Length: 61
Image 1 (cartoon, rainbow, N blue to C red):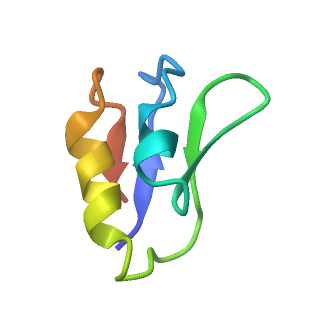
Image 2 (spheres, rainbow, N blue to C red):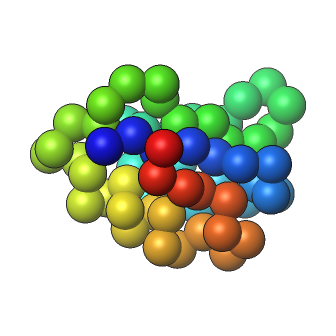
């Protein structure tokens, strides 16, 4: 499974705080997801970050 952060991101950092193995903040102040398959050991946390995103900016890729 892969994740993608779309242009709705407001840079709140919630996703990075929930699952730093998958999400990080860019120099532009918005989130980005890793560009590889998510390790199954953190997939649940990544899905939790997606569900908790206040603007629905995280999608399954």
